[in-house]
Length: 531
Ligand code: KIV
Ligand code: ZN
Image (cartoon, rainbow, N blue to C red; front, side, top):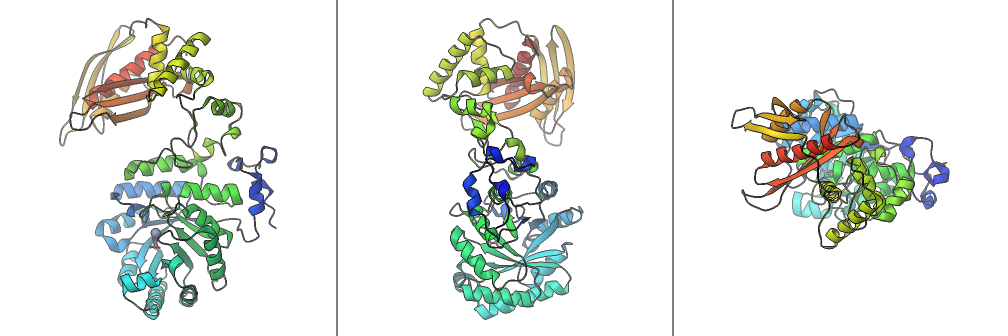
């Protein structure tokens, strides 16, 4: 048995490295077996299978940004796209291959010379070529016999190898392919000098124990490294990837945020953390960069990460109930399997009907609001009443509630005097603002990538470089072009958590509402008694 004591991450057996400070069940140690590798390679296919997510179309610039982020994250291989699919795809792959990234860059090619040559001509030195092998695909899609498919795979791999590139080969729909034929394919492609063989669960139709069985069988005839590519149709992509690794797979195909065809692929963030936490398996991924990479991919693809998504969802480290908040404040391991800093995200104490006085007091103090115990009790009961009537209490509303309880608010210290923004087609959005700060009028101007950005930059130009915008949220309250929008902003002085302030505004004009919310947050910041 491999010595993997460190995976018994009870509080009394904390592993030495920070990244291993996880508090998983001690029973996991009973699932450790000799076939577990010490290290697994991460093959990221966000830019290929991930881009096949319905509704995603990334520009060349976006793809380059994502490739750079994946390289920073530390993945071993970036599958940058499918060169034969379009000229734009080839452009982005050429740009990515010319970046000189540390990660290997790979392109997908069907088993034909045209696809393979298109990939190599983009500067790729790593090709992932595939052909379907299940009878379902042979009969209904390819209309080819098993022998024809095998010959095509051999011929394509030999062609790619003759051009001097690394070749990874996939039997598409491997998990629904006849086992003897699948083994025959593995033997045949090894004869053609393939470098790696991937086992795709193309339609996400296998279970973890069955995946273990399959990989164990394939290992009997496979001498090159085996990779696994799992889809999430039954929500088992990560579990199936782990099962494959248990029996000898040395590489996992993953995507950021689990993007991919239909229900998606195994999520990088979940797979990497699970391998590390449950099997003590190393990867080259810098887990602290997972949160920022997830946010970047979500922003550029336009696919929001569900709140309850493991690791990177907004609620993954959010605590609301008094019991949980109290526990987490005592020691986060009470209600967190690992700290959010391990994956580059933040813990969030949420105010709602389950909140207790402690969390409400702490939350208000973050915004510089101090209330007596009696006043806190009043806020708690108001929050519960609002929540019982189905209303969400966000930070801005909590601060407003507290201000109301505190009574007469001081005269405004930060007042908007004048504001104008110029925008249009082929014009750089430009804003001018005049603000009175403690009785002194100051004017500032700035540009931005849009009118809201220009307006907020102009406000920042007036207020000074120590003021930063920490968060900006915009939501439409009603439908239609005359929709009411709600803007909520969080500002901070010197980026400090204890010098934060929040403002919220509702209106029909996004720019005006953004300015109003920012002014409210700034006024609150300047009216604070203590820093
Ligand atoms: O899911 C799949 O089978 C694929 C192949 C191209 C490997 O994405
Ligand atoms: Zn796939």
